[in-house]
Length: 347
Image 1 (tube, rainbow, N blue to C red):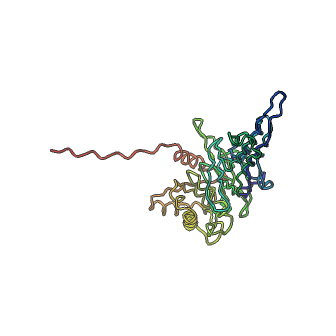
Image 2 (image 1 turned 30 degrees about the vertical axis):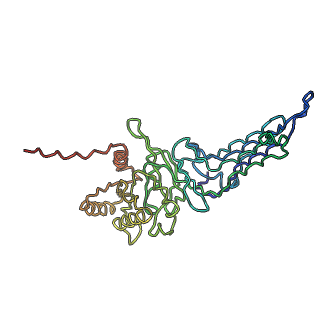
């Protein structure tokens, strides 16, 4: 299935039905009064979360959505039928924005969450409502009100507990394939991953969490270079970030310290709150002899900054368990409360 995470659509709620102009024409009733019924209200438009959906692909090919209008009023005090509410289903994590002014209308991130985005027009009143002692045969009725219409922008931000970020070809896809049942494309060339991949990690004690493989970031991603700008938004909802670094020196002129600095800088430029999220530093490809020396030097350097670096090989499986344990600990451990200082007793 093609991954689509941003679309623009136009919606229109149903118009209200017109009120009716009618009079009673019944046998044995000499003076039948007005009997025009009311028009039905137009159908509204509601967005509802569907956990089975994972993309906005359906809206890429169908960008116009209109609810049914209300029926017109009829004689014998009969009201028109109300238009049905149009329910548009979206995946969890969808943001609904007004495309004309950019205002956020709602964030649909919880199961079965709903958002009313356009109200149907109210039906017009029939002529029976306008009869008075001096105007006993009104020959007019109200027209139905038009339904609301607007242009919307739907933006999907994946709901993942752990996000794996790193430069292209550092082993993100291979790692997520080892710790979950996700089967992303794995190959030895940059930008193999063109869409985020989600996987569920079955942990101990019946616990589980969702991990996302975010497509490769490069320097300048927050300014639109590479694929990073398009997918950085998917990192915002993650609770823990895994910085995956290449310890093999596969790319000339690059090292883990510089790569880590670039990644932190791009995340901070995109959203300052990202830099404050819990993080894990992981040096991948330590199964290569030269990578072990690079890891040791980098770990020693980061230790001075009070940061721990996990050695790992996504290819052989070395160190993967420790990384998963550390991520789970940050996710499931309860924050410890800071003890209050005891008040000094007065003598």
